[in-house]
Amino acid sequence: MELWRKATDMEVDLAPAIRSHLLTRRGPLLEGFVRVSTNWLTVLSYCNATGDDLVELEALRVEIASFSAWAETGISELTKLAAE
Image 1: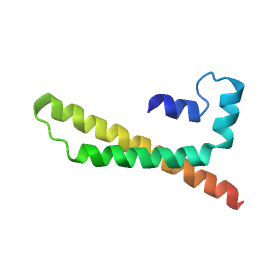
Image 2: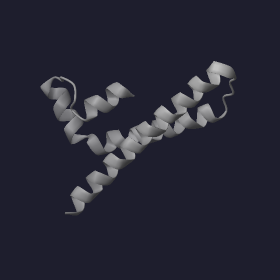
Image 3: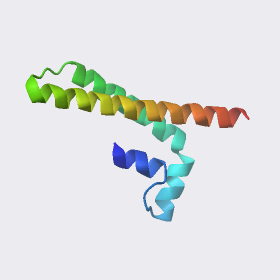
Image 4: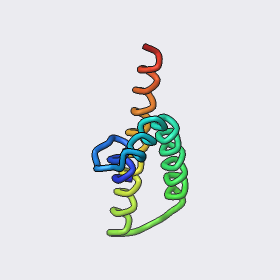
């Protein structure tokens, strides 16, 4: 998730063709990230854990929810730009 996020935000060194792809397809990519993170959270909602594993499971859920929120914010920003 961190690499997807950094690549989409152009925070890592990328080949020009990949950079161009990410810029032109940002909206659909972000929409895909929201779908994927929603599916991951659905799967994790059926997982149980105890002790330290519970802490790690909850941390993963929080990380995925944060990733989804980032993608949703990106979609909102693109929608605002398109309306201007």
